[in-house]
Image 1: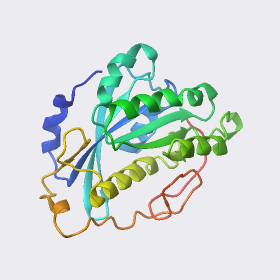
Image 2: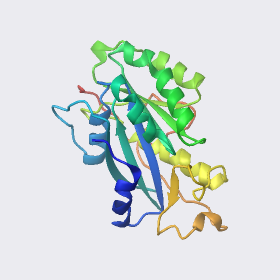
Image 3: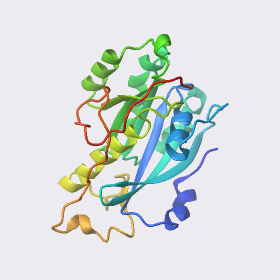
Image 4: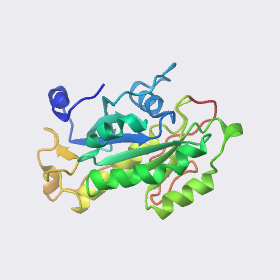
Amino acid sequence: MALDDSDVEGTELLETYDFLLKFIIIGEAGTGKSCLLHQFTQNGFKAHAQHTIGVEFSSRTIKVGEKRIKLQLWDTAGQERFRSVTRSYYRGAAGAILVYDITDRSSFVNLSRWLADAKALASPHLVTVLVGNKSDREDDREVEWSEASRWAHENDIHFIETSSLTGDNVESPFLLAVRAILLSIESGILDPEKAGSGVSYGDRALRRVNSSSRLSFGSLSGGRRRGTVRLKLKDILPGSGRGKCC
């Protein structure tokens, strides 16, 4: 169901948080974007998932150190016929989760188009995480980890593999993107008060980011798993597992 940003403004008043971040989940149809998002927001596998029609909205509030961060999550359809509709939701996104299916090479080959659209339409400081989904289906793999890692490095984005069925690493791309965005705020690169940044203050923040105190991220627990580019993740990635995936 297609939504507009104004349709969800009221929901942001129901809880307190320090920052509100807009994320888009993009990639070819059938890569498991909706399953990945459902696992992240509902902590469970979405059986018998149908292709997304237009755009679907969900949200989740997470804690990063001492900060409560609310994620406004826009799950976009991967079919070409919805492209003109979904691209309008890229506007002002602070983070993008770019998903491909490790068992479907065509979903990897088309990544450049998705990334180009996101960079052109989202926030100038967009943080993108490349996600190779269905990591549990190792026997059916068509895209090697090393190839995807190299592509991510060449395009200056982060990379990790996940399984939306088992939940393996599902939280990691979101935590990685959030942490990178918070670091940009702390360093002054990203201004939450600037229109189109994809970030806004919550009522808990009280503009503390402009004070002399620094943001406190704390430790996000867990061990490290292969599948990361650029940022050291030893303190922020949860544990890993293997299994099957949608």
